[in-house]
Length: 71
Image: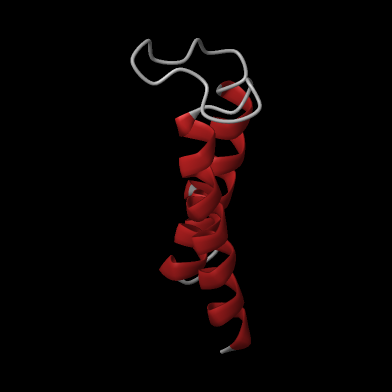
């Protein structure tokens, strides 16, 4: 993100890239993490709550990127 900000891009685009990449990496990391004991797996015996929460974050990043790339 520092590299992108040094290239004088808009802060909103850097924010959208952060949301997109953070949610992707977090989704992958959740495969290796043991889910919380009181929540467990939510769906299909492999999807955790962290993975579900990554989906809106990813979509928000795409939305911000689409809005700002259009301007």
